Image 1 (tube, rainbow, N blue to C red):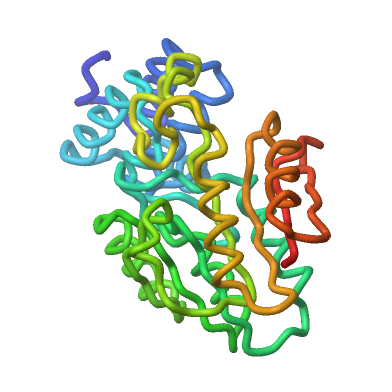
Image 2: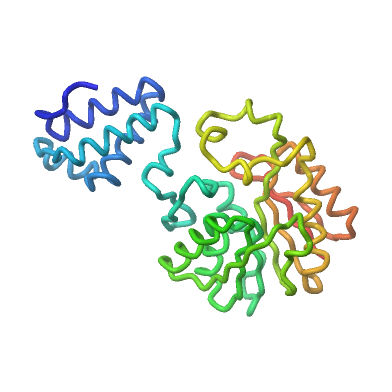
Length: 288
């Protein structure tokens, strides 16, 4: 990158945008450059328009240029700035957890729509990660009792921080959904999960920013059993759901039909899939 010592913010922004275009298309490069300016230097587009000749201090420039180099290696910008936007709130994220995605917001929305007007629900978020699902539900369901469950201590600690900072009322517990001896002894009205479902051998087909940086334990199933965690979730749900309780899961579009059949085979009724904003079957609901 060119020497930045004498560059005002307009020139500096232009140069980091051009640098990012070595790895991203122009629209995404501009968006990423804006994110770095705002979250690292505290300068948004409005300020750049109002004060185009202002200057950043050298420490801020160095931090931004370091972030640019990380982006050129395809590290997700959310991990670089430590934040991800989800359901109207900013959640802290680290490489210990998956980056929250818009498709998962639709899972939250589905639960809220189905249970509008319901009182005192008990909800479990299995594989809570950053806590984005559990905390988002907690903020919108004031009298619900919500547990965030995860096998990762680091994820649970991060989720607890997000819960505290955003004003949620979620309780967090360690649980390995594959190991029944770790299961909590509690009955829930709703169980929700976005479990791992990608077979390990498909890792090479994923984009570099996903396969190279997001936690493997949250992405991949061991071997080639893509339904492993759904099978475990169905078993957990059968013993931990209240009468007429519901389980909601996120799925890969190619697995939706198989997940529907799995829950039907386990005795669940009203098993349906729900399409996302791209009209892909990415969510499944099953009623006990």
